[in-house]
Image (cartoon, rainbow, N blue to C red; front, side):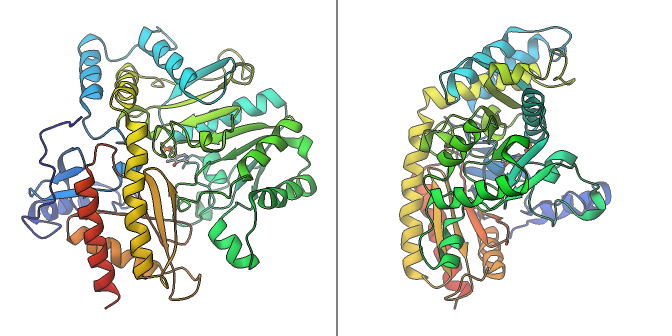
Length: 451
Ligand SMILES: *Cc1c(COP(=O)(O)O)cnc(C)c1O
């Protein structure tokens, strides 16, 4: 599983960014709007395994996978082969004009992979946000209700409805972008690190769920809620793993009250957490699952899959779009799904998780005052940085660590509601050697920042 012949080693041949990246950036500044920023300064020429090669020839360790997208590795051969073959046959018909077998194949495979042994239906779209929009559409049509429950720290996308569902104001939902969609209600997420610190004791998942259920009952009315939409592990919010028991309690409440439970697995799905879907960790069976990022090895594709009666409730013609389930994207997805299975990537995610957990535990032991929390599952791990001895966020240190990584050939992604979380979500094609090299650099980064 390799992609292009990219040497699997970190190597710096210029400063980062190098002269060619700087030159491209000058052109970019005059051609591309500043509204779309880029967090890492290197322009990329090739990528594969666990390495990004920039235009100056620097080899950078990738701990971000283009935000959980290149989970099967960049230019994964299964993906490339299937996508290329499709490009030679036809590039587009619009599935709503002429159907094709690969769309049906991919839907069958997704139905078989998602949690729950019930009759399912699937629809494909282009982006995660579009999948979430359509899940809400299905849930509202099915229930005849309007209210949608979402959570603190949630990220569901950048379309108008999904912005209303996303929690963070800056940079996503400045008030000038509104008015935002109505009938969205935000509830307290189970955030063990901060909940326990605030409560001075361990808040159980059931207690955290009760807090939500009470608010739903008193502020909305359970019988007014169409859907509860939640990331089983929050992505942009800071890789927050809810306390055990939280998700099952919410699922049970949803079931008792005729509410559609939607797991937004756009970031946590597709082997990322060491299960095909993060919902499996606590054995929950969402009514609907939204997915995208890891689904097609980098090509734009998303899906909603779930209970047939809910998916069909939007009515004939109620879902669609020009490009949704584009033949090349669907072919790429079939390649990615083949790679997950044949290359044992679910198991590999667990192994990667063990390496990262070991290194994070060591690091936290070295800097217990500022590494407030380490958490995650499989190849979706994070550390939360705080002001020495408190739970006050420390975005300055977080950025200093990420900048040190950048200068030393390491791509680190900063995230979290408070901008104080570094998340580790490497492609599953990365080697243990690269992972360990990356964490050696991170140890140097802490030593330099805290000197
Ligand atoms: C990225 C993300 C989205 C939005 O996906 P886009 O493809 O960027 O529209 C939605 N939900 C979650 C959990 C995500 O991580």
